[in-house]
Length: 156
Image 1 (cartoon, rainbow, N blue to C red):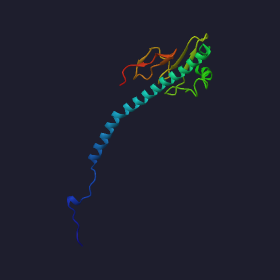
Image 2: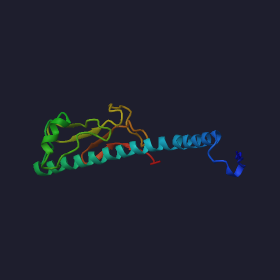
Image 3: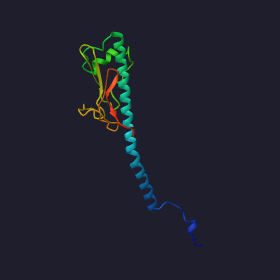
Image 4: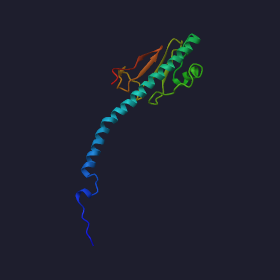
């Protein structure tokens, strides 16, 4: 019987445990850098969607006012206001902001003004006013065809 002796060149190649640990560590570092940026980008998209939807609903209310010479009268919430503008002034308006929180909407009893609001990611009315674009809990208020409060600051 002949014995088989392998030389170093003939030994099957593979990764050592150290090489595998280094690769896993590198992947972990890349993930730690990329994940917060991804989550921030998702929230920015929801914030922009909310602002766009508020502007669209506001445009529908302005169209209603153009036809009737007043804004809808004495609407206390979005549930009461939605049937007034749907489907004649906007087809299937969104019922919630980017974070799936219900809109807050109200109109004056005399039809002189209206307010639409998204309370941001936390869905809670804030008393502190606007905030930076990275503050996703910042309330967004739209009235009279323009934003009165919104997340301001540099887009980073």
